[in-house]
Amino acid sequence: MQAVRSFVQEIRRTLRCFSGGNEHASRVLCVLDQIDLSESNQHYRTPGEPLHGRDLRQAIDGMPRSLEKLASALRNALPELQWRVDRGTYYETNADVGDGYRNGSMHCELIGPHGSAFHHGDFTLGLFLLTPRLLYRDHAHRAPELYLTLMGPSGWRFDGGKWRDVPPGTIIWNEPETSHATRVYDKPFLSIYSWTRDVHSKCRIVPRGDWSQIEAALSAANP
Ligand SMILES: [Fe+2]
Image (tube, rainbow, N blue to C red):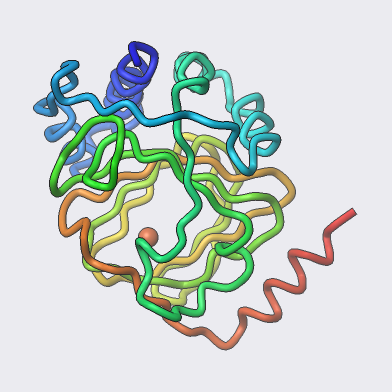
């Protein structure tokens, strides 16, 4: 588990580097600076081959040079990480999450209350992966959320506005109850995520009329 601890410490260092004084990243850093990373707060979880292991390795190999140290710490930690597919932990019952999220996502909670490597009752930090050519549909939640993109470009829209692409190393901040959606192109999407409070609140889907069109266009790019 030493490699997981080193990885969390590298995430902290990377966030400090990339935050550029971003107040939201500072909020995450503040908790990370206080979190108990000792063995007494560590919970071993049986690692296993992740469902989307090939995409994960491709994403790590594609991380830019500016994130090289983080990629290296992540590679070292891989044999100790437990990846999960959301089967209803995070969304309201019967939420229309779509096939993209249902079949093409996985996450690894490093800090949090859901059986993660290090326990915290109301804060989460982890890794989130989406496989190529999918739409992560518009959704919102009470928890404030930070992403640090590790691969890209990825497409984002907020409150149903115009799409914009962001490169790896971008900090995305989602205010409570603000809807957001993500488009993944021909490379897998990998990010650090953090919910800074209200982590037991559920996500709700925010329906938009263009999902089918976007999903069809993304999947038509399939070779
Ligand atoms: Fe979110």
